[in-house]
Amino acid sequence: MKNITNEELPALIEKATAGDKESLETVILSVQDLVFNLSLRMLGTFPDAEDAAQDILLKILTHLSSFKGESAFSTWVFRIAINHLKNYQKHVFAKFPLSFEFYGDDINNGNIDDVPDLTQNVEKSILAEELKLSCTNVMLQCLDPESRCIFILGTMFKVDSRIAGDILGVSPEAYRQRLSRIRRKMADFLMEYCGEYGSGRCRCANRVNYAIQNHRINPAQLDFTSAVPKKIIEVKEAMENIDVLSQEFAFCKTWQSPASLKEFIQMFLDGASCSVVTNA
Image 1 (tube, rainbow, N blue to C red):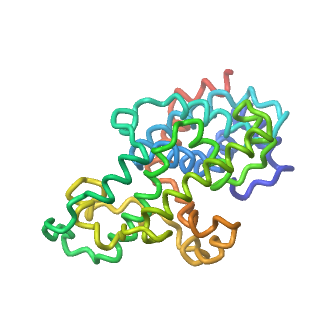
Image 2: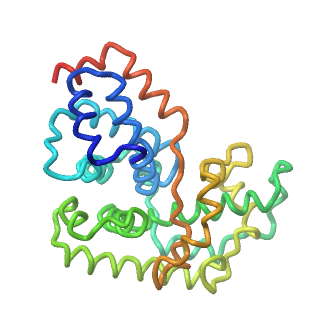
């Protein structure tokens, strides 16, 4: 959440549910990036994440009056978002599920040497960074939805185990144990196959054209590299000091929501359907 203190939030929500559009906009925009980043990690692609984030933000808008302050607002938002995303079936990986076995086989046996230059005059180092960010994000799709939730809450958002357990309906101890196993599984895969974060043979720079050929990245639309805030790049090294598995999980960056998501929120607030909030 941005620029809203815990002391300011109750008053803003009260004004928002009473029909103050400016307060409503402030509250929703404060969680926009949280919702988008959670959606992106859970679903793997920018278009799917943006569609899901719109659905979630509408749920938050239309159910805001049901927030009673019994938990932190961010916890309430996480619960709505995760309940929506765990059952979301419209994303590409619901139709074409991934597994670590499939991913590993593609790394070992994908024919990367006979692909022509498809870079469209985009600098190869930029495309390699796009592939790295895309690949490590999509790798989360090898986990089942529940495990993905646990990994994302614990590794990216660093949610306290008591809160995460409450969100997911498990005990804090069970959550910590599962998080540890999932982190180890992810780290083992990276160490075995990835040359960027481990000792594997896969190097993003060598697979750029193969990735373009297989529609994994698009030189004309660099979603990941264009959406990483400059400040995140500047503190990349600091992010690598989180814990003993930090190097493996240095890819857990935060992305800015697309401008179109803010436009969607603005259109909703300016439209007649916004009355469902004030009349709830």
